[in-house]
Image 1: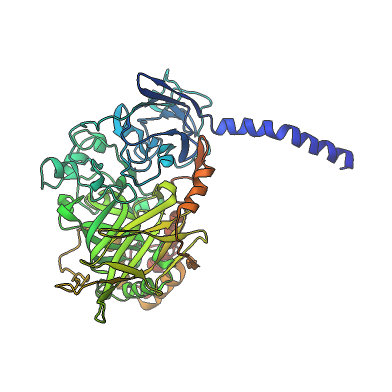
Image 2: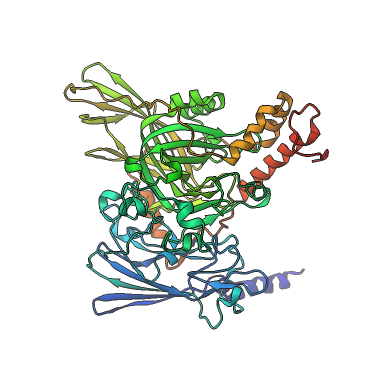
Amino acid sequence: MGPRFTFYLRVGIALFSPLLLVLVSSGARRQTLAPCTESGGKTFCHIAEPAVNTRLSEFPQIRFKDGDLITVRAGGCVQTGGRGRTWKRYVDPSGPNSHQFYHGLIWVPGANVGLERIQSVNNKQIFVRTCGRIKPEDVFLRLGYEDDNYGDNSYRDHDDGTEDQCKDSVNAFVDLEIEHDAMPPAGDPAAPLDLEHPTSCENYDPNLLPLNPRWGSQRTQPPELPNPVQKCTLTDMLFDDPGCSTQHPSFDKPTGTNSVVCALKPGRPGTGIPGHVNYFPAVYTGGIEWDTHTGGLFGDDDYNLNIFPPRKAGQTVFNERSLGIEFDSDETIDNFDTPWWNRFHDAVDTSDVFASELVNSEHAIIAGLVGLDCQHDCISEIHPVFAFAVLVKRTTVSTQPLSVEDTWAIFVRDTGDEGFCSSEIHYLDLVNRTFKFSLPKPTNASNYSILGSTIFKANNSNCAWSSERPTPAGIEVGFFLPENSMIHGDLHLKWVFTSTPAELPDNPHRPGSTTASNEESRIEEQLAALSKNLTKEQLDFYHANSKTRRIKHNFVVPLVHDLAPLTARLRSASREGQQKRGESLHDSQKEARDRKKFNVATKVLWRTFPHSKVRLGKKVTP
């Protein structure tokens, strides 16, 4: 290869690479936005061929304001890739796996909660109400798409689609009709399993997430708790039946070896769904109690707790005592490294009694994906937990002026999985990547300070946190989370009383209950119970070989005066149709962890160790 050839090669690359880039990108993303038009006091916007090769696309030039009433009209079809006829409807696809994937998504902050299926708002009106929680420039349109493989989605090579659903159809589109300074719509009557959307600022948390939302039947026929099996799982339409829900929740089902085990379905007969039915993220508050850790052989390593929301919000007839909380220890606490979280991890590994003593509290704030675990009798739960704040200790300091010291155990993240009988990764969509807790103050306390023992750590050096502002009820604490980030730590606050209160602040500890867990037949617990019959040699082998390597989250998170400069960088980076998070919804890391555990458990159980008291089969070679 001589100098002349090298020269012409460089010239050719310089001349033709921009053209090649245009050709490649046009195949991957062809969404076009016609300029919005004004007519009759309304604004009309049209998005043709919205991007389907990514989970999230931003349109900062389509902005909304408080009082806007938006009518959403969408339709058309999308090439979802694969073999044969693979085009599917953008709004309401049909065919294999359509309960899980292939839906167009929409998010208007203050009008709906993160990326939700367009199907739930199509040909309906949504009302913008931000309650002053976010800046006007952040109230713009986001669209998205859900799939387990974005790489082969496009608008090329049109066919009639799975089950002929796209015969004579056009490519996907989204139309918006925006009426300004409007009144909130009256809305349709809530179906029994519709989860409540906020209708006033009191029903929002600081992140514009629903606060303690109730089911439709809890609102229309209080205090009735819904029966999801009776209302939803005994019909062919399942949760698309308007007699069950009008919100078209998504499904998360297990794959691989997990699907075989979950198909055993030891739960309540008739639920018909091996996996999870998911609505949207929300925040619940109330007392909290430790339940159990589903570790051991075949266990999913989930930490399980129960929260007691006001008015039994979000509960069903199958978990009328409390609302379940779950998060995967492989994703979270196994990687934590602050004093309280280390003590809690050790307590859980020791006994449920020790764990209860540390975490049971009358004050908890839990944010996560709300859904129904139909693998386990269709109980309602918060799974995965995205944000966790529990008042774990309160100490009265009798010196003058009288004060109390509160310890809050906190973690915040933006992704998570749903345990053994699931296969997807789930996201918390946040405006400007910031999550805020509103922490209550002791009654009659006046001033506060952050003690030096406070520490937060993260898996990302770009994270930050801030004591945002005092409120009449307490303080707001904010956390900045770049994508795929997680923050955990121990927050120590000192509250001062200007005058001696008539009563000392309450003790946050909540005594544990002897009442049985919500779940009558948790399959992970049944499988984990096999560990009780194993020899020490077998258990040592399993624990030594089943765990993936832990990477401690050791970046100390700085306390900053204001998170606004960090979030401003995000706003300046936004542009028309900007795409984010193009990765698959399929959780490949969880799949790898589960496969490793299953393979090691099989070696332990199937006669690899001759002294086993357990026999699941006659195979000798795993």
